[in-house]
Structure formats: C-alpha cells, structure tokens
Image (cartoon, rainbow, N blue to C red):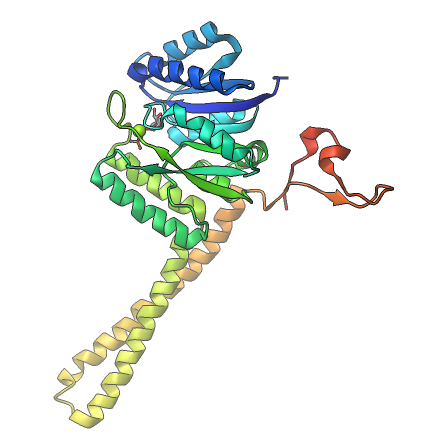
Length: 338
Ligand code: UDP
Ligand code: MG
C-alpha cells in the first residue's frame, strides 16, 4: 500500500508541453519549502504534444515527489482530476491547472486555511486574467449555482482548491460520468471557506476549451448540482397557465363592459385558451422532469450522507470516544449508502 503523505497536488494536463517544465519546477520549489511530505500527481489527459513523455520522465527523475498518471485518450479536465484523486494519498489534496494561471506560490495559503479545520478551501480569482466573455459567463453561472445550491461560494470556476481526505473519498464513491468536482465536493463539505488568490494569464498556448466544450462543461455544472433545471419547467408552466387564466378572466369581465367588438370577435379568447394549454403542457413536462430527476439521482448513486465521526459516551471517565481514537484511522470517516 502507498505511504500516506501530508498533501497531494493533482494537476490535469492536456497538451501543456510548453508549460510543464516551469510548472514542475515551481510546484517542487513551493512544496519543498513548505515542509511536510507531499506528492505531485500529473494526469496526462490524452495529450498529443509529448506531455505524456515529459510527465513520465519527471516521475522517473523526481522519485516519490512526482507521480505520472497517463490516460489513454482525452476524457476532459474533470475526469482527469478524478483519475488523479484516485491515485492520491495525501491528507489534504490541492487541485490546480497546468497552465500556471493558478500560481503554485498560492498553495501554502490554502494549506494554512486547511489547518484551521475546513473541509474545503475554495478560491476567488482576484483580477482574473481571462476574456470578458469568460468572466461574464462565469459570473452568471456562479450566481445561478449560489442561488440554487444555497452554498455561498463565489467562484466555482477556479480549480485551485484544497480538499480534506474524507471529502476526496466521498467524491471517489460517486460513479457519475459528467461531473464538476468543486460542486460535488461542496455537496459533502461541512465547513468551507473561500480565500482570494492571484490569477495569471496562461503561460503558453491557448485555452483547451472550445466554445462547444465550454457549453458542455456548463451543462455538467448545472446538472451535477441539482435537478433544478428540470424543476424550472413546472415552475414556468404554472406561471404561463396562471397568466392564461388571469387573461381569460380579464377578457370575460371586459367583454361584459365593452361589448363583443372590443374582444376582437373572440380572437383574444383564443389566446387565453392557448396560454392555459401551453402552461398545462409545461406543467406536465415538469412533472415528467420530477420523475426523471429522481431516476437521475438514483442512477448517480451518490452517497446520501456522510458520517465524519461517531461519538459514544462509553468510557469510564465519562469522556466521549470518537471513532478517531477507537478504531484504526482508515475507518474514521465512513460513507454510508442508503
Ligand atoms: N485540461 C484537461 N483536459 C481537457 C481540457 C483541459 O486536462 O480536455 C486541463 C488543461 O491542461 C489545464 C486545465 O485543464 O491544466 C484547465 O484548462 P484550460 O487552462 O485550457 O482552461 P481555462 O483556463 O481556459 O478555463
Ligand atoms: Mg487556464
């Protein structure tokens, strides 16, 4: 079995050959200076520019400090991070991007916060160095996520984040294919905090996200957090149907006051009827959505709750015993399925 380390870095890499040298150099420097045992896990996500060979070489050169995980093709950033998390054995796991937009020099700040007992440390990018389109799309999505999940994090897009081991174990128990790790982690986290970190322009190359890939990522994000978009259908339907009914009543009343000419010989009435029917269809769709949402939740098979400690009062002196002291540490945090 792999020896435990104090912290692991997990970095997804897709065609980042121009950045890898600098990335590994800066990460090693930061980790060695910080103290404690560590591992840097570089996950090659099916690169075609020789990144995989560079990662293998680094793993051979730096021994235990660098671990390479090579995927056989491109699966996407979050799948690559998942593969890295599965290999990690740090008590704390920090994820970051390979293009050096997240400066590795910020990692000690996150580790410092983790020492205060948080499960997840998120980050807010100060003076974000991306295009206005990316910034706008990101703030819109962050707003929707905040409103629908109720988790008051401001920047879900920044992958420079730290997670405690039990949260990683919880994430790894989830078998879903399309996922968005920061949201998934937050669904298991009790104590979270966000800190400000610097954000640099990409060191070399272009973003690995085309517009299509970006849209697909936003859908992963929306669907991974909740079945809220499905519920929106019933909500919209109810509003349309209510508007139609109100319109119908309005027409009826006005018809008596103003006579048949005012009602355009019944054309308006048709509109009111149409509104009610369209609304009813939406409500029907929404109801179907509710069922599909429940099926979706069951298929994803996420753990339905997460026990971090069991406390008993069985000791003679009356003090509480936590699993942490009563059992081997591997059993401290257990995930229990329904
Ligand atoms: N990435 C990946 N697989 C992909 C796309 C991206 O592993 O299919 C990695 C990429 O190498 C980088 C991180 O994910 O380390 C973030 O990608 P990028 O910087 O292109 O995203 P952006 O900063 O434009 O959101
Ligand atoms: Mg980037």
